[in-house]
Length: 113
Image (cartoon, rainbow, N blue to C red; front, side):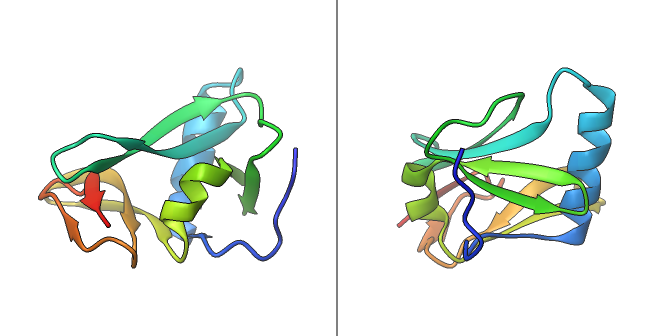
């Protein structure tokens, strides 16, 4: 497992609190994996999974006890992004503010570069 101290992906305090809350309810998992996949209405989509094991090429972001794993391929698309958790009238969701995205869908789960 590799850890990058100079990662350009930031996890907000709200996201860290929510990740930690979710992980405390699922003791068999210890991290949130964020990845980018082809597909979605705008070309690429974000995928969120709970996991118990980091892969050898993952970067590990730790904030306030919460762990986020991102593989190197996905990191190229997420460079400079902020992972946030929003709880508003539209509902609760993880959101990624990605400066690389030139367009995104209305639901915020897919984007294009």
